[in-house]
Image (cartoon, rainbow, N blue to C red; front, top):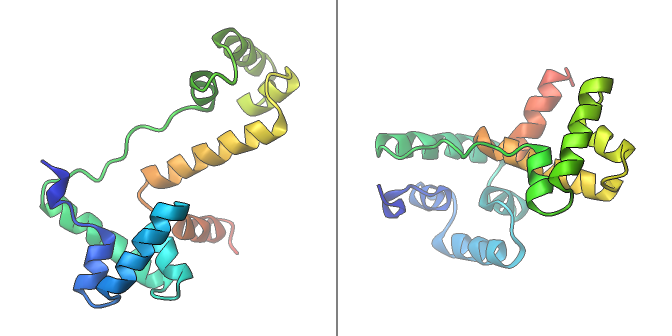
Length: 155
């Protein structure tokens, strides 16, 4: 089905009068200019709470499911795959780091650092990108992810 029918978070919030159309337009303009998630922008603008956001993300999912629209995200990419595709490392370097990982039990990122195939800053950037992909793929916001992690850690 076409995305024209998809229920968007901002539209739900306007429909249920949590924000105005003007608020939504301003937040969409900010998103276009700076990037980011619309829900987080609305929270930062003081227009909705984290609880509102979690409630309406669930509503959005339910309504899109009723319309027969998938809420599944594409499969996330592996760290080595991302680095290789972006030309940061070669396939030979990835294979070597994977062999090193298997031999030592180190995480791939550590293997890549040990082998001096990537610098720390590059690794952190790609791990952050990968983490965001995971957060997106399980259908929660960064705020919700932080809450889930703090609950799991017993904080």
